[in-house]
Image (cartoon, rainbow, N blue to C red; front, side, top):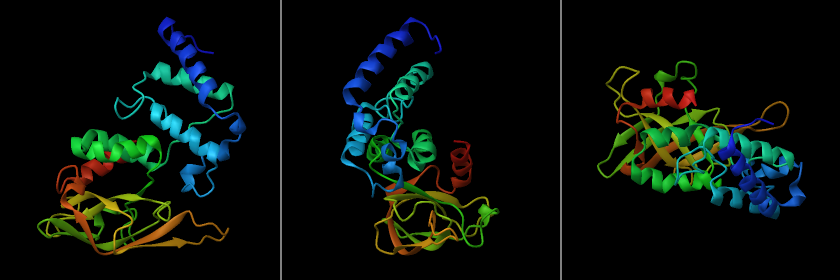
Length: 248
C-alpha cells in the first residue's frame, strides 16, 4: 500500500466508507457484470446499473476530471480510490471512448455550452460514444477522408461513410472527422462534428468477424442534418484536434 501522506489517508477513510455504503455486494469480483454498460448496457443488471449510477453521481467514474465534470480528485486520491475498490472486488463501471478519448478532448476544445450538454452523460456512463475516423479509402492515410459536411446555413449536411467504427451499433453519439472545405489541402479543411446516431440518414452495419463477433461496424451518413452547434474545435482545424484526441 502506498503512503501518500495525511491528506490522502484521510481521503482513504472517506473512500472506504462510501464504497461500503454504495457498492452492491452481489457484484464483488464479477467484473464483467460491473462493466456491462460498456457493451451497450444490454446485459446490465439492476445492481450493475445502480453501481454505475452511484459512481457517476459521485463523479468517481472520472475521478481526476475537474468539477463539475468529474470527481475533482488529485492523482494520489484517485490511486487511493483504486486501491480501496480493488480490496472489495470493485471496478470502475464507467468507461468507453467517451471517457478515454472524446471527453478529455472536449474539455480542451469544446465550448462551455457543449461541455454542459455532453459531459454529464459521459461522466454518468449513460451515453455511449463511437469514433468516426477511418473510411474505406482513408485508413492509415486518414487525411484523405472524403465524408463531407456541407454548410446549409442553419445546419451541416453530412454524406459519406466510415468503417471499423467500434461499438457503433450501441452508440448514442459519434465524434466524427469530416471534410468541410473540399478545396483545401488534405490535412486542412477537416472539422469535427458530434453526430446523433439516432438521426435520420444514419445507418450502421455490424461487420461479422470469423469468430462470430461484431465489434466493428460500417457507418453510413446519407443527408444527415447536424446542427451548427455540434461542430466543435476550430472550423477546418480538425486535424490538430484529431491528433490531440489520439494522444489520450
